[in-house]
Length: 543
Image (cartoon, rainbow, N blue to C red):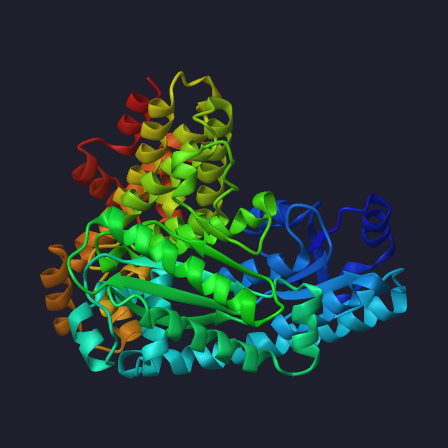
């Protein structure tokens, strides 16, 4: 069955949907209910959601913004809008942005069921297509030609391209980037006001975007100290990457960049009757940190819900004036989880950056910081548990669930605890998923981690990877420092320790769960690995 989340702030409508629709009959399970967009995003990471049925006009975050953020998460979830007649233009814009369908209020059960049946068929087809495309992707992965736009997109999103040799990529695709200071701004055009809707209805929205790109180029000519790259991130959303051409102080570069975006905003306002909001991230000293500036720009844009749009909003102003509270960093939360799971040490820097932004935006209010830190730990743990379940078999993170952060006495204490959590998970990943840069070894480790309960031999892994045993053994040793079978034993013994600590399994049961045929052989391996028999280990742990 496919999972459904309802996002509805009207209790009567919510109850009707919950009780009157026979979800299972149409191949769905009602997984959870959220009251607004922010609540929906937090639950989105906790459950497997295939379909989101959402009210389009809601407080805190509307259905359009929810759809855009789900797309940022890289999910293929179907979004269906519930819309009153007066909100129909928003629903139509949602369809242009990628929503699946909409149902008018008051809801007619027959029409809703028709949409559900159609959505179920689409999901089945999508699953089949994903399986086909995944097989094709694996074959083409190493030879995939990276386009200039994809390079810029991946740099902004913090994807694997940042670990490549940047100079080689920049030269190959003739991208005007240096490895020096960088600042990212995001220009959001329209924000679905009446004027922008008219541009869309008339079919001239693409023409508007071209004219705004021309304005960016013209304004840049007035700033001969800046270089600029820009890329479309979504409909009506342009990311602008600024760098200084010559040596410049960080403060001076930031001031010039803000002035540049103020000029762009004013030129657009004078030329077109359309709302424009620009979010600006922090300056970072290295191009490798460009994704942090991009995420800062997205966080700045979130403040339009507090400050209003149609202006330039710089994330740096909240470091100086913390009276405006930061919204919860939903995008950076996912990026942090992904960086942790790739064993990237930059996760520590990103975690510190997120925490400092939260602290600055809450006037160092301990209760609010503690709540945000708790949410980050909880949501990252759930994200990891859902996507990388093997972690809980190798390391016991329950210690982080048993601490009440709200009882901490200082911001520094909370920060140290949060960084300790990130560091602990990161160290586990680096320990059990070595050689992340080698795709073949990465696949071998992932296979072992996802098949801990099975018997794993050199024959089975070499067949899985379609390479010879001798070549694989040599390569694995070279890249990780382990013999492959030693690595397998290490993984199995660590899970055995977790199972024995739990105390509810006998030795022969643990043996069977790990895929060993003889309990005596398992016991010998365990003693060799830990210096104790399973019974001794269990006794000493509980004592």
